[in-house]
Amino acid sequence: MPAVQPQLTTIEQYEALPEDTRAEVFDGQIYYMASPSQSHQTVLTELLVAIRNYLRKKGSECQIFPAPFNVKLSDKPLTIVQPDLMVVCDKKKLDGKRCNGAPDFIIEIVSPGNPSDDYIRKAYYYKNAGVREYWIVDPRRKTVTINYFEANIVSVQYPFESIIKVNIYDDLLINFFEIADLLNL
Image (cartoon, rainbow, N blue to C red):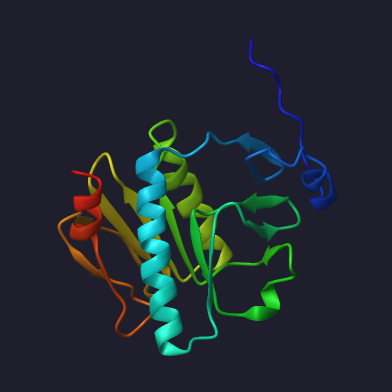
């Protein structure tokens, strides 16, 4: 019989977890996360650099953060996530420890052990919290699923051989063919 996980009802309980704990909380229920793979980190790094360079070039006030950086989507019930990448444009949401409220743009890179987390659970929470755009990058399936919640467009899928536009920006394009080449896909 699996051990029952404790319910977390406050941010203080979450912050009291051991510092090296990788965990998210959905409606007070804690979910532990595995360490990322090499391919996961390669994709994350390439996307981080491309988006950061774009934001700097444009002189944008938006900031990009890689995991682990907490996002508190809700106090009641407590919901805290650690997206692989997020862009936050409203600096008032940042308190030095976390983002309080929905980031503008989130990218999750699918881990083999829990793909439904990204495709179902997180898509649900991100949409309801007000995330404008959410991408699911799946290196094993070699796909990128775009959810442009701001325009009510969900689950448009592209192959890794694509150059994909970030919808919340006029001219930010991500070349996944180059990323796939780094992964030898």
